[in-house]
Amino acid sequence: MHIQNFKTFCDLVETQSFSKAARLNEVTQSAVSQQLKAMENYYDMLIIDRNQKKFRLTQQGTTLYKTFKEILTLYERLSCEIQEMRNVVSGSIQISTVNSIGLHELPPYLKSFMKEFPSVNARVEYRRANLVYEDVLHGTADIGLVAFPVKHKELTIIPFATDELIVAMNPNHPLATKENLSIEELKEVEFIAFEKDIPTRKATDQILRNAEVEVSIVMEFDNVETVKRALEINAGVAIIPKNTVANETDRKQLVTCKLDEGKHIRPLSLIHKKTRMLTPALRSFIETMLHSPSQKEE
Image 1 (cartoon, rainbow, N blue to C red):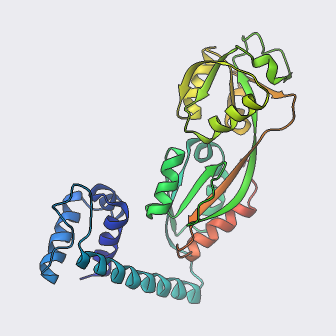
Image 2 (image 1 turned 135 degrees about the vertical axis):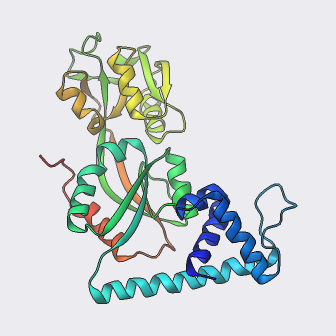
């Protein structure tokens, strides 16, 4: 048994998915199945209960998982200590993020990080907000980037930036001449919204609810890019993060205005599992996110 076999098996247990375990270890799904079969032959016992419809370990499989996890933890700790002794920052980082942060907030940080630590391979995957939490909790991502972070007993939450929710629309929309809008002016206006499980949608609903304003939702989307495309064809107005629409406003494709009732802040945070060992690469990435300027480099 090699250390990589231990990692593949632990990834399989934590994700409960042969395809995800394969992707995490850059092998085929068939290779994961073959490794599991070889492990069962080596120990001469069943590891996964194949009589169950859901993924379930046998008692022996549970014992193996706990032991392999301890071995991997010791191995990771040793690797970290050796890197620190050599003053080396290398390895890989798996980042799971929602589109709005990954496309509009992360790039300048990532550029700064890769310039300082070129030996680190940073991989970014764009996911729905709920899946970002799942990725981090299941170990398929080292770091998650989310808006309006939700507390969880197994997660560490580290705020790194804020954005403002504003109203955006096509330049030809009747409200486009206004610099500021009261929430009441949105009453019965055709509205483009995020889908109901998106954190920014929940925040938007709360803003409207507090003002006792009902809008006429004509479209719902799961990411900010499709919301902006709908705005560009003048299908309605939307409350979206200010930074995500900067390029479109610069090109005069969209206009924005603030809500009179003051700033509506959208907090952005990093999340990682509390039990996740922070390698030198991970610690350096977190430090970069906390201290690098959020403005895009010219």
